[in-house]
Amino acid sequence: MGKRIVIDPVTRIEGHAKITVHLNDDDQVSEARFHVAEFRGFEKFCEGRPYTEMAGITSRVCGICPVSHLIASVKAGDEIMAVDIPPAAEKLRRLMNLAQIVQSHALSFFHMSSPDLLLGFESPAPQRNIFGVAAVDPELARGGIRLRQFGQEIIEALGGKKIHPAWTTPGGVRGPLTDEECQRIRTRVDEALSTATSAIGLFKGLLHKYREEAEAFGNFPTLFMGLIADDGTWEHYGGQLRFVDHTRTIVADNLEPSRYPDFIGESVESYSYLKSPYYKPLGYPDGIYRVGPLARLNLCERMGTPLADKELDEFRNRGAISGTSTFYFHYARLIEILSGVERIAELVDDPDVRSADFRAKAGVNRLEGVGCSEAPRGTLFHHYQVDRNGIIQKVNLIIATGQNNLAMNRTVTQIAKHYIHDGQASEGILNRLEAGIRAYDPCLSCSTHAIGNMPMIVELVNSSGNTVSQWKRDSQ
Amino acid sequence: MSESIKNQIILIGYGSSLRGDDVIGRLVAEGVADLHLPNVFAISCTQLVPELAAQIAEARAVIFVDASIGEQNRRVAVHQLTCGPDIRPASHIVAAQSLLELAAACYQRSPPVWLITVPANDFETTEQVSPAARQNVIAAVGAVERLLDDLRQTEVAHA
Image 1 (cartoon, chains in turn green, orange):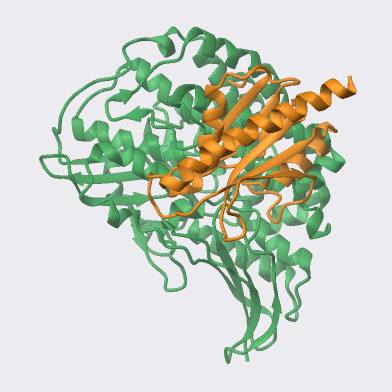
Image 2 (image 1 turned 180 degrees about the vertical axis):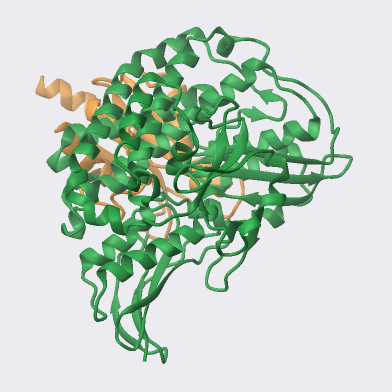
């Protein structure tokens, strides 16, 4: 009789999920699954709304990464209007997106993942949090808080508030930065760079302790996808799409985001509300691909900023594992923070971010638009179809986290097979299963459009459906 | 960008503007801000986030303002808070007590803290605030002013 171990809820991630580990009759792991039980429904209830409202509506998919949806949404709106936005507007949108990447990555690393790395996966659960980090390294905790504050305050300076800023609009943005705001950002750059650099140094120093985890946490070949600039530089806002394999060999290049249905398929599994996108030419599920920080680093030839490029070289010199292991998402995330801060410093010195030419105006000139940008967690698509009055007829959202769904499932299977034997799983092992998911920094509210909270528990269930034992975690 | 609030009294009113009366805390913060009281810095926000710990650590005192529900909470009430770990200590949303804990852990500072709870009735998905809640906002602003007076008198007495 097979058995099943269930982790419910998965902690220190955004949103609600559970993991089930299926054991065979010999009590060895046969498979593990990542289930998302939330359902949101944005794709449906947005029908009938004006496309101009979509940025404000879809930004409320999430409180962590609303900016990502703002950007992708208005880019879809730009296409519906058939406008090229002013250069100042693009730079301002880029500035906001970079701030979003910095603050989101800072939350992921310092608050959600550093407790495991600094205190150990086996450390007592009540201590595995930002308070535990502050107890052993208050400077790291302070740095993480201030780094996220840095990103959030740039978002607030641009959009008027940190969460759900209503500032981007199809055609451009609603306003530039002032001289004073640019100066305030400049005064914080050095500290942000120092925090990012220190965190990278800390992570590199800890890598030797986690060789086993690096080998077992989602270390398998997949494709990787993301936006890339025309010259091969790391990109987060524009450019075209590229797929590479785990050796960084280009599989498909110069893909126009608006043609995503040609190369991205979406499958559905009965055990989760999270869809499973895949690379169509390879079919499902062989077309598994990953998005996000590790993908973006694998795709690009360079980061395009000096300090980050130096770190990227060292990252790549760590061998093949740095290109395949999900554990290395943490490292990639930190390099992106560093590059993000460097780019922010460049942008606030650009006079265009204070320009009065920040918006192009037009009506509906196309009945369809696809907006694509890089959210912190990976590539995000907003696809709208409208009528002649600009009223939404159909919406398709392909969310970063969803694109990692196949990989997340394979990751928990790999971790479970490596650590769980004879049907036994210690608390530290259960934490490693969660940590495998946490490395992707999933945003489940985004990817499932859920309503409300769902309490969850951990169960070990045999193949007859009987609960053999149960672990309860505090509900989120 | 955040101004220096060193040695100021911070008032943090929080709640969702899309959930009816849940926005009460923010309305109180905005009401206090409109009074332009000396050395009082009012923050209106949707959620309590870890970054607030940095500002709390600099403050002379902190006042949180939030909506309350339940028959037992029919009046504006002022509670003094102490540190305490949150049930979700590492998420982007933290309780008031956890913020104090974070400020103490990261900055070794624990200013005196109060929580003012304001009765609320309607938490449906709406941007409308009930008339009763609006009246309670006025009462809560009054409670803030009295608390601030008490604080000043206490500080003068100990000076």
